[in-house]
Image 1 (tube, rainbow, N blue to C red):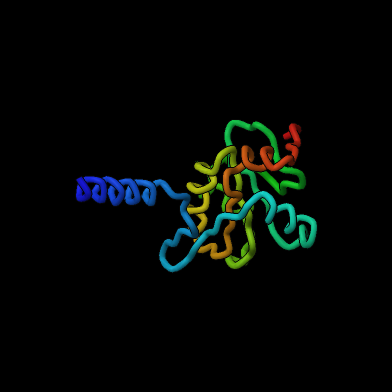
Image 2 (image 1 turned 120 degrees about the vertical axis):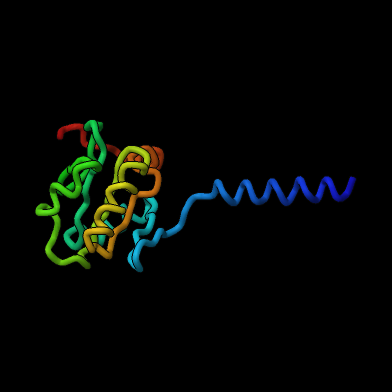
Length: 137
């Protein structure tokens, strides 16, 4: 009985670890990190002019205030001209939940960008944190 219980506990722990939220992801030595809504608010208040804020969600369902521009997550490679020539420039990506932003970030990492941040939980988390969206495109 104890062995069965121990096996179940270990199996449960492994399953839960597999479901955990990912930390920074890496591709070819470059990474993108997740930031909370609170961290993004702090960045926006302290140094909004030092990073790009980009909405990758389609279809349009709102923007975070002061969003620089929107580009569909699946068209990043066709719009690299919109991004800074400086591959180390800080870029914050977001979408509704984070799935599209992760795909966009992978494309930007493949294009050589090295300083990418993603809004953890996307616009849903932003609104849950009490923040508002701009509904004008």
